[in-house]
Length: 414
Ligand SMILES: [Zn+2]
View (cartoon, rainbow, N blue to C red):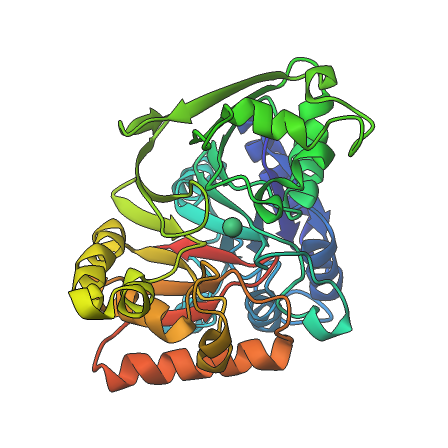
């Protein structure tokens, strides 16, 4: 199925030109004849890109762009302005408000197609679940989200799924609806419940003809596919993994880098109970590091081996994580605890957000996404975590952009 493009335009001739001109390239064109309807459609529907005229009735194009950029669902949607206005100030204004490109009317559909293609080939990260340990839905977590880890990285037509926490359920519905479930690749960090519990509810796994390739660490005494099957034993779940109709193949990672389409993937062990991997993913000249569920060695070893200079040894071990995140464009990091939580949770296998910031600064990352939010933290606590983390970056005299991972939000990796 092709990409769905929303055209916000009241001129019938342009509506016709875009429809007739883009459909041969495989797009579905949806038309809204005023700004109000356009905005509502973009927010409610599964739109892949927006083409918008500036002077549309009911809501000016500028305001539509502004509102699209203010909403996490449409923040990184490709938006192209098509306008007869030739003033440089108008063009600049549209781009300042967040439009990706400006096309002068009259235009050839080919020109729009080429622009759309270049915008679709950006690398886009989407958060489907951001919560650590256990799903924590409810009014107090509604802004950042309550589902457990699941993240996608899209590069053009290619997608990588990271972890299968409860956020995977909604991703499955989305993939099935967009017709994008034919071939899927999923990396699992480890098999604690919060990272695999969405799997039995992953709709595309039940459809014959779909291919699902799962990669992850070999667990201590059972192969990975047995662990995944284990949570679907009849005592726990009514359908067995073997009954899922998709062609599912599980590969255990044993140290060698892997290439999946345009993604080049290396990985390292995390300091977490059991066997856990953190991933470094290179794609399109960009680097994304996904390292969740890990704890700094130095605090643990300081406590365990005070006489042997455990802290110093721990510091050396902690450099592994810095290496995994080195110069990453986006570092998605375990930052479950506030400093106060960590006082009583030493040895639980997670990281305090200030330490996550330090790794990001030491590794020289461009953007740090605070991830694996504690189920006990409400939205206000995560606001505070974000603020404190940004302050830490300032204190360190660094220039790392810090965001708090938010369910449903996208990040374009520039
Ligand atoms: Zn875990």
